[in-house]
Image (cartoon, rainbow, N blue to C red; front, side, top):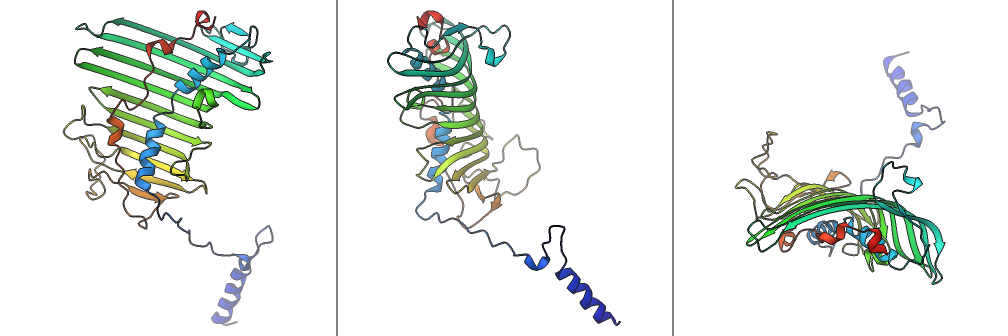
Length: 340
């Protein structure tokens, strides 16, 4: 048998080999090239701007305020109120308050599940004094609760959330820091208004007054009210610095990190920023991509694409007011006395 014949037999064997499931290589169909979505008329820069703006609203306050408003409508004994955590949470020495019940009030308001909350706040001084007014508050919630009436969900909170704030206000001086972590689902007209709510795992840290900064890390899925009528989710891991308090080497035109948005067809559009600054110790030398120009590189399903060009969102509107909605000092407390 000559070499050519042996080669032909070998190649035939490769072309017709069978795996354990009975599928031969003749059944192989090459994957089609990834079809790029049509973004004609879609303002991607504005979509990323709206995504970050809406993410700053992913805080504990909607769940906390919705729970308070729902309890304002309760009937005596529906739901039952407890000092401490319900048995479902298995928390020892819990010092907060909870409600746990499955009941319907004479007015048709239904409570189901449980919610536990705890909060504390200290404040001293005055905004007119040289030392100023200082507020230091923190609060947390856990629950698997829903409140409804006539088939409409008024309040839903399933998960865990916490936040804290430190604020100092004095004549010609203001400084604050705020952090929030929400892991779960929040919905209902008492919590999110006309919106149908969201499911999230989002951490925020922000500062304002003398130093403007924002960190956002996590993801969120909105049940309705899509961004640009197209994008239902956002994910990000970024740090953004404002003009107030920025150092000479800080880039205020763009964040460090990335921000992604997802359309209803599950296509993720990730915008990656790489500004260089004084903290850059990576030795990265791509001056074109690491310039502080406010633009990022767009990746589609994790693959860099030049079809859409550079995307240059403007996040400066975040600093026109406080970048997050700060709670009032009174919002950190929801006591038995207040419920009564």
